[in-house]
Image 1 (cartoon, helix red, strand yellow):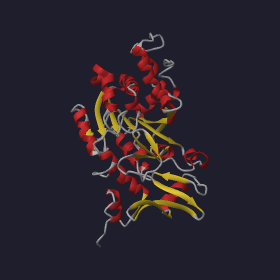
Image 2: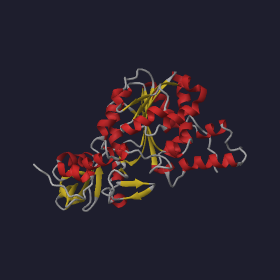
Image 3: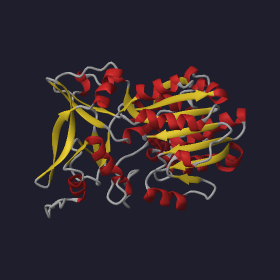
Image 4: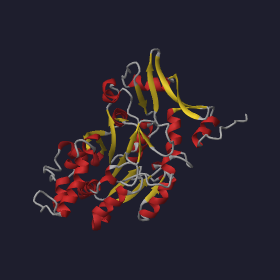
Length: 384
């Protein structure tokens, strides 16, 4: 069939026209973020950090990787070398920061280092930025499964997975599809497929009429593959924005869902605007990752706000080793470093909004459980 294109149509409109003129939102989001030629994460512009569109904990402040490095030392002192996997490695800030913080201890503490990054453009940058000993792969299954203790770290991976969007109508759930009408992207409602409806039923969720919500149907499968690869002596640290299902789908707080878009640190709620030029994200349903891990024999150690995780993992001790503790003189260096620290501890920002899900197995799970019992750190970090 010959398809006639409106000359004003953009790249994604043409693809949708080729696919029948209408696609599910997850398919649209997949294209907008990951299309190899035009997707948001395929571009050459910086996406992470202060010069990009959004901040992650490793790019927002060096204190995150300093504390993680100290915790890795704590683990290695007890089990020997630990392998470190960075899922959604992005620009390599996490692995580079940990390496810098460890310094001469790096070879003693770390075994294998694996950077997993879906974007080919970002993988090219990782190869140039990180040492040759770091394995850079597109998917974790490409890396040989480790046999020793491992920490698998995922920073804002799951909130960037494609989601289906639904709206509760008088006759039940409708999926919000993306259609091309006269060359323009627009919303269209269709009765929800059984897999989408089952997702909400399985979580005991009943949406109110007019309520909009998202469902990430691929989160459990992906997390399951990561857990399987990690083996029987592992810690999984998942850093992301999200809530348990009962809060995520509460109409009083999130009647229009959690979907958000970012460009140059400016928030938008319109994912159809400038596809490929803005980030699209939706909050994680933590129950997806928690229930799957429990069913596969993993121990849940805790779901902690970022600030609490950092304090329990030894933030105050790290500050003291850098002469930035409570007794440090308030010179320019101390003021600057404490400002960097406060960015991650902010109760009105990252410190509260970002959560860390800690899951473990074997010796690593037992050691990681100290974070849940607050045995590793009893000190209070310095305040600015």
